[in-house]
Length: 66
Image (cartoon, rainbow, N blue to C red; front, top):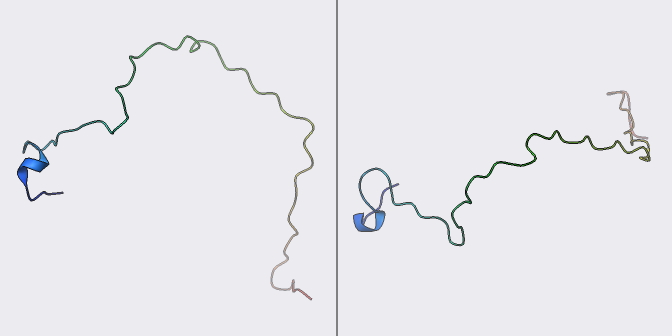
């Protein structure tokens, strides 16, 4: 992408000036996750689900409507 006005495009060193988007602050300092060594608990499998719905089977060209 080129600009007509070199003053608007920033320095000509191949890297344009980079600024954060409006409303975006710098990221917080990296902190170790205190729960990283704990393995996650598996979620319980629900047992009260209804049977899954199935679609009618189509037999190919011989299957005609009506």
